Image (cartoon, rainbow, N blue to C red; front, top):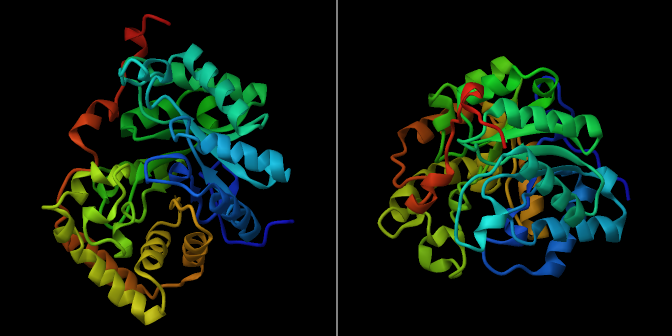
Amino acid sequence: MAAKTYLTRKLGANGPAVSAIGFGAMGVGTYYGQTDSEEVFKTLTYAADRGVTFWDTSDVYGSSEETIGKWFSTTGRRSEVFLATKFGSVDINLVAKQIYKQNSKPAYIRQQLEASLKKLQTEWVDLYYQHRVDPEVPIEVVMETLGELVKSGKIKYIGLSECSIDVLRRAKAVPFAGEKLVACQMEFSPFEVGIEKSGFVAAARELGVAVVAYSPLGRGMITGRFKSRAEFEPADIRQMMPRFADENFPKNLGVVDEFRAIASKYSVTPGQIALAWILAEHPDFVPIPGTRTVERLEENAKAAEITLSLEDVKALRTAVEAADVQGERFPAQFASLMHAECISLDEWKGE
């Protein structure tokens, strides 16, 4: 079945058109409690039918890659999906030893791509991200390795995630590979607008790189469906997140009321208003909310069809700026995996 027509956005100055709202597949495999595999398959099919065909996964998202690969092999619809996956947030080979560190060495990148292709049951990845910056490997070395993979046909475009402005500029300056760098995945939501204040958004626009906004619903907080941490399953990653801590959660829900008030004017949900607000404020952003159900997929997809008035966009911006968000983005034990900088080429001693 061919995908329905859906709103699209260009992914960077040199990139392709993708669905204006993507599909985040982290929860398909892990981190957000138990998954109903039958419902997930229905959701993937519905996403493809609906035209939400920019799918995002990673080598560390549990069974997510395998599930998507099974869907590809079962349906034969691989060519309809613009598929993104990632490498390097942790060295998979060391996790069993409870050692957690990034790895973007060339041999490891090639190893992980082959592993992902096998799990995904595909011959190519449309967008391949460095999931986290490896402080021990120059970004130039990473980009040259990824450029070789583009030339081989195994990947089509390159992305970065959680990098600094300097790393992004260095990456774009690499011959050939820099031209294929079309996206940078960064957290952005009504609770997290740091990339605007840091100058990252302005730099990305200058360089022709799209921002792919992950966790655009604040990991579900903006929906207002959850009122306390007790509502999450024990294995849900939000149990560890500082913004969902008992002392912070109630305080952070304040901005939800503002989004709910605007949502009532359009007869939609606060989550839909949050996505519509991101799209309205940033024509070059592509949000990738995650879900595992057809109902939520449809809710997210419809957000791209909402046209907010300029007055409401300004009102939402005022609410976001006034919000006193409590708690860090990630727990302290993840801090070592959030490097945004890396060594220079002069400091590189090779693999």
